[in-house]
Every structure is written in C-alpha cells, then in structure tokens.
Length: 433
RNA sequence: GGUGAGGUGGGUGAGUGGCUGAAACCACCGGUUUGCUAAACCGGCGUACGUGGAAACAUGUACCGCGGGUUCGAAUCCCGCCCUCACCGCCA
Image (tube, rainbow, N blue to C red; front, top):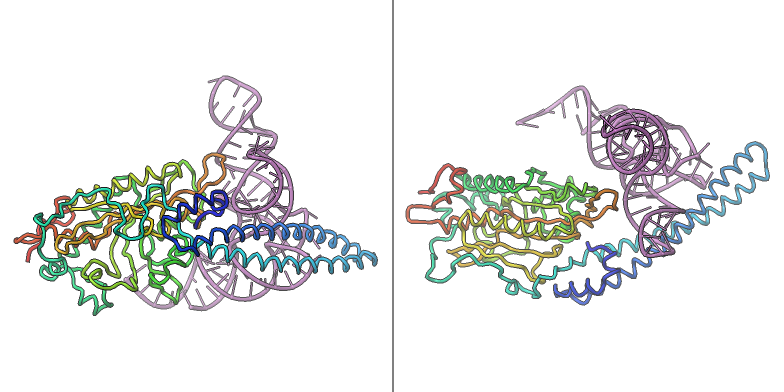
C-alpha cells in the first residue's frame, strides 16, 4: 500500500501518477477520503491519549487512597470510591473512541488497499497491452523467417514429453504430467536457471509452498487476488502463486542492517494458480496452466539504488534468453497493463513460431515501497531512523512457456535439438522419437 | 493426535497486581584513560503513532507471542488462538 505520509505530502504527484493507470474517478476520490480519515484518526488519538494519561494519574491516586482506607482512614476510602466512578466515566469515553478509531483505521486501510502503486516516470500512458512499449526486439518475426512447424502441444505428444489428458485424470485440466525427456528438460532448465542466478550473486532458498494468511497479505495476494489462489481451508493455508510470496515475506516486520543491502534471493518453486476466468487459445497447451515451475529472483534494495538493481535484473533475465538462443522482445508495460502493486514492470516475451504469438516468460518489477510498507520491511544505516526498503522481483524464468518456445524453435526433421547451454544439464542433445 | 513445560528488548535472562518500558549481564554506539590494541571507567542503546519543532530533540500514548476479558490499576490473574520444547502415539 502507499504510504499515507506520501499521500498527505505529495498529493498532486500521487494523483498525477495514478492517472496513468486510467483509474476510475471513484478510486481517485479515495485519495481525499484517506486524508480525511487520517485527520480523524489523529484527532481521536489525541483525545484518547489525553484521557489515558489522566486515567493513569487517577489510578495512582486511587491506589494510595485505598491503602490509607485499609489502614482505617474512612475519608480516604470514600474518596477512592468517588474517583473510581470518575475513572469509569473516562473509561467509557475511551472505549467509545477506541471503537471509532478501529472503524476509521479499518476504512482507511480498506481504501489504501484499493489504491494501486504510482507508476514510475518512464511508464507509458495507455490502457491495453497494445500500448506497451517495445524497448527491445531480438527476433525475426517476418513471414519468411524461420516459422511454422508444429505447436508445442503436438510436439509434446509426438515425442511423449508431457501429457495433459493424464493430468486431467490425476487432478483436472491444466495440470500437465511431464515425462521422459520432457521431465528431464524441465529439470535441466530449473537447475540451469538457479545456477545462473547463484553465479549472479543470488542466494538460493527453498521456501514453503503453502503460506499463511499474513504472508499472503504481505505481498498483496490478499485481499486483491483471493480468487487466484488455491486455499487449503482446513489449515487456512494458501498455495503460493509465485515464489515472490514466501521469499519477499522472509523479511516481513524486520529491520535490516543497511550495509547488507541489496539482498538477493533466488528460489525455484512450483506455482499454483486457479486462473479463474481464463479461456480460449490462451490456455492451449502449456500457454497457461494451473501448476507450473518457475525460478524467481527477488531483491531488497536501498531506495536510491533500486532502479540500478532493476536494470541488473533485466540484464540477468535477458542473458538467460540469449544463452538459450530464443527470439524475444522486452516490453515496458503501460500504466493500464501494469500490475497493481508495481511502479515499473518489464515483460520478457518469447516468440512462439508455430503459434505466431508472443508468450510472456518473465515479468520484472520494482515495487518501490508499496510492498515493504505493507510488510514493514525496513533498514537502518548507522543510527538513522528505520526506512522502508524497495522490493523487486522477476521471473528468471517461468518454465512452461520457455519449454514451449524451445520445442517449437528447435524442432527439426530429426527431432528437437537441445540448446548447447542446457546439454550439460540434460545429458542429451536431441529429443527423438 | 495426547500429555506436560514454556513464549519478556539484538542475545542471555530477572520480574506473580501499582514504585516496571521493563533489573542484570552480553553485544552494539559515543566518550575518558592509554605509544597502539586490550582492559577499566562514564554515558547512550527498541518500535509505532500523536503533540510541539526547520531540525536536533522534547513530550504523551501504546506495545513483554496474538486476540479478548477481570480490575481504579495487568508483563504479572482469567479465556481463546498461534508457536516452541520434552515425552508418548503415528510416520516419509
């Protein structure tokens, strides 16, 4: 969530930034409402603090009087009773203020949850994916370029690499079963991606795949995307939709040592997404599934350095695609297409030559303090006050679409060639019938 | 899953109704002393929000796992939940 301080102090900048997202008037109206509520919160606290202070004084007096009363001073005992009545009145007022305060804070937080992050300066205006800015194109998409061939789902069947029908039997649609060289390729990619990230200075972590409510709230999955997560209701755990959730929450409610920044973590996890409402050619084959593997990189950065770190992450992700030799492009997402919590997002897309469409394989974002404010992830340098860190994350990379891209791009009459960098990991260089 | 013990500041740990935002020690920071280092000594050393202030800072309130309750007054008593440890059961 946005910092209330920022909204108060730089309201114009906040509103100007948010208009890039094409928000409704209603949401923009929340800004003013939040400030009003915050004022109310302050007034309530001021009064309540004063009453609490006076009741503390009374309590001490009463204590003294009761002691005197116990040693026979009837006058004191009487006075104690009188004061008790007085305090009872104060207490009543305090509890009144208390419940008002709870309501105000609740409403304020509810509204703050509805206000998305402020897009960075470079974010283009726009509503739709078409408005995204192509910042790099490293692919030949012309008709006479390498094109055609079988789509990956047919290749998967032909070479027995994965089986959707079997997945449906075991679970339901969108849960593919990888097998044979398909499974080996999957595993090879995971290890390759992790090794590359470790080489780039990321520490590997293996987090839990189920998280509690606090953790899901921390990264904004709750309440915004409740319906997107699988929910184990008996224990009230959520299956993670991305490693971002547990990994970013590692430092929830922590004050980090400023000299430890940036902190870089990489995690491989399966990801679970209900994808309610998706349909059509988007969900064909591996394009969109309910369970998939992903290697995620996460950084906790000093606010002054976070855009340098973002660039570093972009370079890292790009290097993976270059090493795999796949055609790709990089998009800077427009205000309307960007995630709710992000300040700046770059998407990496691989060109599917058989489907003649772009497949998103990575999304790299700087969240600035939007997540860290919610999670209270701060750092301190020397004796300074704690300050919110910037959080960043990106896929490096999301597996199924990379597999799709590789299968389609590297298919030949002899079979599917394995990119050279992967061969040490797969142990074979060709997938044949 | 059952039984028992327990959750206090960065760490160890005292504290069973008021004088405790919390002893003491360790760690850490500043200073004195000192050829240097160490030791010794002195001082400081949580977070959030409010109020005043340009700021340094001062001050009020809250916080002793979390949430309720009892009481004039709760770290301390009561209830619920979470977690940790030990033993038993089950088991990869």
